[in-house]
Length: 149
Image (cartoon, rainbow, N blue to C red; front, side, top):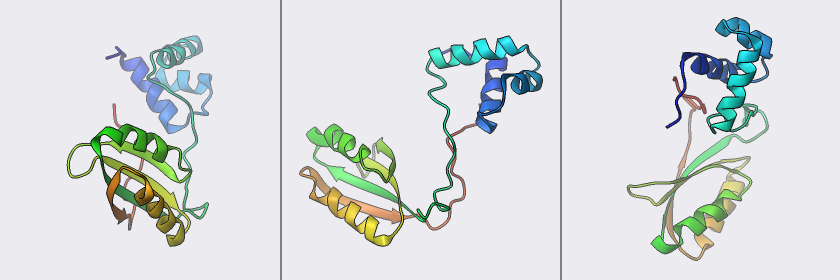
């Protein structure tokens, strides 16, 4: 596990709030020099803690109003291949290799029930997929890619 200190955590929090903040703004908020922020961000990137800087998209505004969580049961020897294939699908936002009642959990967003229906049928037509269990999200209570450090 990578070692980070309180300054690193403060910088991460500022970037999570808005990754477009200038180094100067972050430095003022954290109480360190601009060069320190620059060096710390590079360190965090080199350690693999910061993977990339991406915008947070409101998919509903773009017409993707349906979010589905799909549990998949598959033949054991093919799970990794199935996960890789599913991860290539344009609507898929997450693929998890899990324990419990399912082997794989998929989160995907759709513009219509028809798109969801076609996706589920594609999943079921995959050679080693035994069954799927689809749940539709009714309300988003919390959806974030951040946790409190």
